[in-house]
Length: 166
Image 1 (cartoon, rainbow, N blue to C red):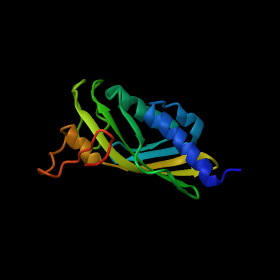
Image 2 (cartoon, rainbow, N blue to C red; image 1 turned 60 degrees about the vertical axis):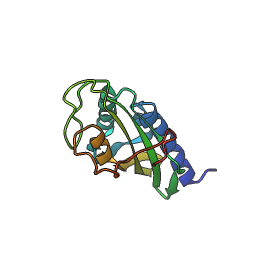
Image 3 (spheres, helix red, strand yellow; image 1 turned 180 degrees about the horizontal axis):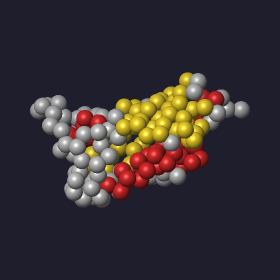
């Protein structure tokens, strides 16, 4: 029989691959608690399954190719918590987008690309995700979108083709 930590890691792995990797917003119905909370600084806190689905659907309407995947490190589990590091991004080829803490893309299809990483802590209870609390490189993404000032020369965040921070 698998440990609680192994079961929780399997739930988070499936959720992350489906929700963030493939854009399957309906996976929250299967894997998340009814009172699920998702919270990232760039988008703000959302409460409930429908709010989480809406956030992803709107993000993908603006960035149809947006995708995120595990980055460098395995998922780490302890008790009810699972922590994962991720990386990803996409190009703004869709609708105008204002679901950001700072600024908005007030025109569709700007062609601007975002590529950033982050770390997320998931809390699970009885095999369901109750909280997804993340810290992403929001500043980097907002700079890439031209919504905040660019970094000082030499302080840019860059990645190689394999997603390694260079």
